[in-house]
Amino acid sequence: MSAEKSRFRRALGKLRKALPWVIAAAVFLVIIWLGVKNGMERRSVFIYKDHLNDTAVTVDGKAMTFKDLAFYVVYEEYQVQKSAYVYDQDKPANYWNSHVNGKFITIEARNTAMDMAVHDRILLLMAQSDGVVLSSDERDELETRRTDFYEDLYDDQTERLPVSYSTLNSAMEDIAVVEKYQQKLADEKNDTYASFGYEGKNYRAILKKHSVKVNKELWSKVPMGRVTLNNEPDYQAAKGKQNYFKGTDKDK
Image (cartoon, rainbow, N blue to C red; front, side):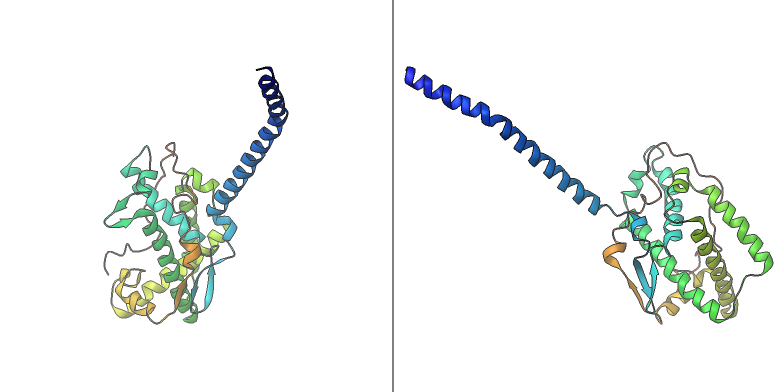
C-alpha cells in the first residue's frame, strides 16, 4: 500500500506542477477562439461607410458608388420607419423583420432604394442632355425642401448619416432636376407624372433601353433599417412632411 501511495503522490505532484500550464494553455486557446469569432463577426457586419467608394451598380457601363446611393438609403429608411412605428411603436424593428404581402420589408426597402437611384441616374443624364436646369425660384424651393428633409429625419439618422451633408445636398439637387424633367416628359406625352416614376409604365419602357448591373454581392448585404437607424424603442417621432418628391406613383 505504501508503494502505491508513493506512486499516487508522485503522480499528483506532477499533475499539480503541470496544472498551471494546462490552465494557461486553455485560457490561451479561449482567447484565440474569441479573437477569431469576433473577427469573423466584424467581417460579417456590413458597415456602409466602409464601402462608399465601392460600386453599387453600373448604369450603361458607368459606376454608381455606395456614396452615390446614400441619399436613397437615408430617405427609404426614414419612409419605412414611419410605417414601422404604426406597426409596433415600442419595437419598430419588428416591422423591418416582418414578411408582408409576400415580401420581406428589409429586402423590399433595399430594392426600392436601388430602383429610385437607377431611375434618377437615367433621367438625370437625359435631362442634362436636353439642357434642363433649375430656375432661381426652383432653387429657392430646393433650399426649403432640404431644410424640411433634415428637420424630419429621426435623431438617430442625423447622428448616423453615412455621408456628408454636402453629398446629400448634391443628390437632392440632382433629384430636383430629375423631377423637373420627369414633369416635362409627362407633359410632352400628355400622361401622368407618375407614369415616368420608377414604377411607372413609361419609365419601364425607357429602362429597357439601358444596361443596369447591380453589384449583388455587396448590395445584398446592406442592412436596411440599421444603416442610419438602430431601431431602439426610444425614438422620438419624426415631424412633418410625408413626401419630399412630386407625385406618389398612384397612376402607372
